[in-house]
Length: 462
Ligand SMILES: NC(=O)c1ccc[n+]([C@@H]2O[C@H](COP(=O)([O-])OP(=O)(O)OC[C@H]3O[C@@H](n4cnc5c(N)ncnc54)[C@H](OP(=O)(O)O)[C@@H]3O)[C@@H](O)[C@H]2O)c1
Image (cartoon, rainbow, N blue to C red; front, side, top):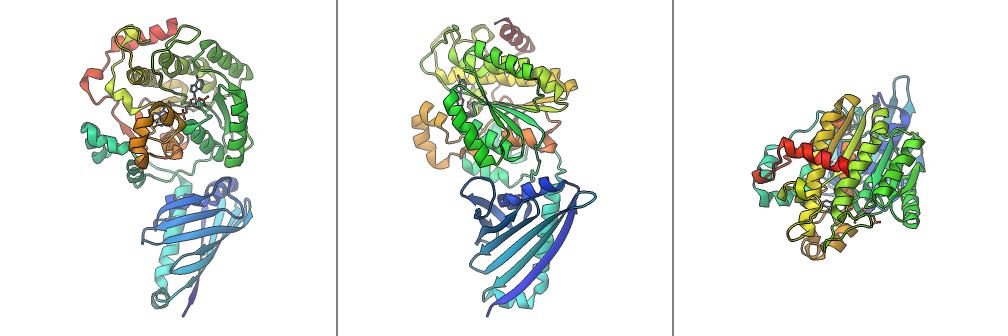
């Protein structure tokens, strides 16, 4: 025999209606706020709308299938739920109040036997479930969390280098995710600049920032591709505020022209993500005579970030995120050979040394710009299956494909550093999966203060 039960819970939060609606309406966010949910997957793409569907994996071991049947932004959301133990219709109502937003959650469940008998015997259990769900939603929307610290397990994994590599896989991501706090930050009114936005991690970062309401400037080198990229991000993020700037970041004339254009436009930059990257084998130089890894991975972000510093300062609280790589752990900076002119060239070593250089700049900028409220962090995306990995490391990809993260998972920590309120005051650190990691794991890679200074002088002199 079936058993019907209706739950009706209301909360009020001090957040504007459109922010609350945007966060909840992308119902995959349920994995951040419902304590009974293990994981939520969006089936399909594009902004939430009638027809959007989600698969929600419950900690109890079964899955729910949600389908949006009515969508009235920013006031009402109705979803049909099907699963083995029950079906339901869930309605969420959003109302602006004097101090924020009221959210009312009405769920009409129809339980199948044998759960129906249990629910009949213990009706208070369902009330408890509804209260926990809404308490989780309130906590997520209040979004007041402490900055994360390195866990003991992570610290140990970092020291034992080989087991530590496991952290870079999608299983490492899943495991880390269990410790994360919700992030409901809305980025409306903030301007983000993302380099290397045409593919992989840069594309996923730009899309996630746009979906959170930021105005996003995409930097890429191919005008036609970038127009298509911008159209995709507008469509997927449901946000028209996406612009394109064309620059080949291996050419310093292009970098300087990009800086000049953005400075002329004068729009403050709240978020700068230095993501563009590639691995070059064999050694090659650009038309300007610069070794390519050095040009793209170190000199370009140096010139771009230094050049945009006034616009970052003007934002009154800006965040710079440098996308690095665990590869930097193997290399020490060689200030006398920044362009790999001496010895046998290795693309992987040149790449890792440039990333090491950008880690040093991350620390230097973090201290130099603290007073201007510019925080600067570096992050490792883990191993993500991107076009870059496919073309630069095909054998590595073949070997690891089953454990690689998807680009959105690779981008996740960059987005968190750019958006989370608790990341606003963190600076000068190296992050993986929302956790700070050491910048060196081998003593021989440590640079001296004199080498740091000489690096800055060398970059400024070019
Ligand atoms: N995927 C991983 O597992 C992984 C691991 C560690 C670190 N990373 C880092 O993550 C970042 C993104 O890599 P990805 O894996 O997403 O690779 P990807 O798919 O190849 O994306 C690289 C991006 O950089 C752009 N780019 C390359 N050269 C450029 C140039 N000269 N001027 C302007 N843009 C240029 C590419 O533009 P085009 O489309 O025009 O080529 C593309 O948008 C890189 O910094 C990489 O070092 C990735």
